[in-house]
Image (cartoon, rainbow, N blue to C red; front, top):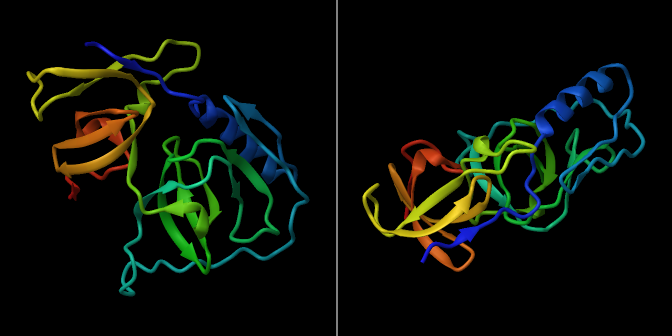
Length: 205
């Protein structure tokens, strides 16, 4: 059976929006944008000093950088580690993989698959590993290509399901080349290099 799993509310076309936002912020203002269900909310600009986050990679805590996933279906991405900092983006995608790149008290600076970064509350993040399947293949205005979930870790193995580029997969395990993932009720193998949310050659059990 050939099953096609589609991607709900994909976060696409955001990179250009983020660049325009950065330019406007340098001029002292903030832009408001909406794209594919993601809404840009603008509170008052805070006058707080720039934070000096601590990279805790060598402190015995969890390593930085590392991947996590978004717990709620809605989360504010802020320009700094505190509620006084303006919201620069709102994520509307539960389970979205994010890369933690810095830590500051109860806040985490994260980077998404588009390369945009900001701060979210630690409580909004989960250690559950997820990944986007070939998000770079999802183009605005173009039907996304289909990616195969396979029954075994071989290009010649049986097709389990076809999923759209950009869907979120739960990562069950990875051996450095292939990952065993689930999308909706389907489970299968996909090459590790096709996932955003897992490091190259990373082993997950």
